[in-house]
Image (cartoon, rainbow, N blue to C red):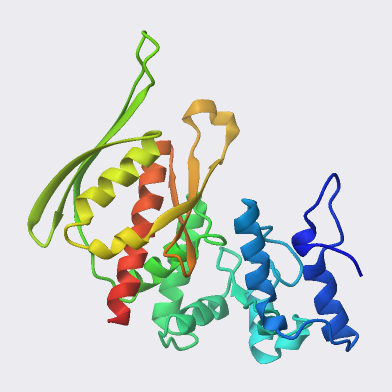
Length: 295
């Protein structure tokens, strides 16, 4: 079989080896590669090197290849995984992905909490409270399917296992366009308080969101130098109701990384800057929560 990793190639592409190899090895019993459990990492590596976004729905190696959403669906997977999964996800280096949305049941919440090391009993008031809050936010336009980071923060808050890393006083963003051909300038000001210490920072960036990101980091670095490890790898905007035109509610999804793992966070507002800010803050906040929990 001739092909390429992720099927990349000229024109319409080539045979995708990340789909063919698992079929040969797991379905047909043919020895194709010695370390099949490295396949997902290889797929992501080729994406990074070629500067291509990873295809979430790719068979075997995609982020949603083993995703489960509906409450009954997730409950069945808990009891008998092979009823919905044709292979063990870990055999190709992937993992089961439990999505949480307004269609979810408590089984989804319980599995998410379990992965965080939090024990929740089925039918517990805490699980019901979390599910209720998820549904409330989804009615406001939030979506947690690709924003597991924001969901993790929500769970920690609802369970009282969340420590606020800073208090925001205010933030301001501006865009200046000059007539003389000078490049436009985006500037952001962030004022916050960490452990009773006020901090005011200003930063310029390539766009308003980048300026906000830089100003926030500049304010937090003296207190949390470890956030230097965090970087933004993706930024997506979706208009939720086009009928409202420029006043439409906006959902912003941000993907952050610390070089070892990625996480998605989400913000929703009829102001795109506020939606971006909410997603930005959640991204850094989650990193700090995880770092604190691991110490």
